[in-house]
Image (cartoon, rainbow, N blue to C red):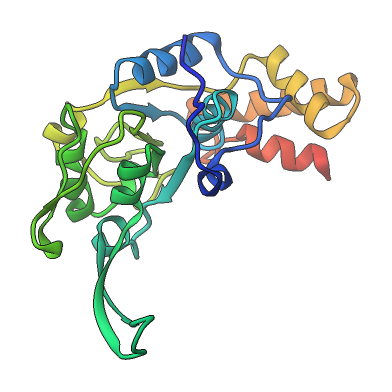
Length: 252
């Protein structure tokens, strides 16, 4: 079992996700996530777009009152956004400008015991992946060279998760443009959890509970999505049909 957080100061509660009572997750994947949390193992969730990878982590965090930070590693993301940087700000006493260090999302999460999701990890620039690599070691060592070599203290509840559509080997299907080859030393630091779309019955239940459509319509929508997915596997179409897209369709 994963322990409930009971030590949260009020300002950290803004980062605790809301429990989604209508969320469904594969029990085996959920158990694997819990094992990673209990043993401080870095989990990389890999699977097709819109199958609930990030939502599964959010759901677990919500259940145990755990603050969670999500970082989308797009092409414009800078190492300073992750680690922090020196900025100019007025001194409260004198009003004169002074140079101060401002933590990025990673050291802030480490100090405060938040979980962090590195979203679209297989699309992040190589420089960012290498920056994160040390934090994936046991104990999560992080030295802020730009802040006089400060070694960031690590809260015992800090955890690292990553999500991706590919396993860091690139993408030959053409579905996930912008994904990169990941360094083997980086991948070696993760426990990989391979995710997929829910079984048809569960996916229908998700549509009914989240959007209020009737079961007959949910069955028809999931049937169409399943046909598209099979056609993509057979090379007949070049786009998948995610659960995210199904939910949007059902809502419309």
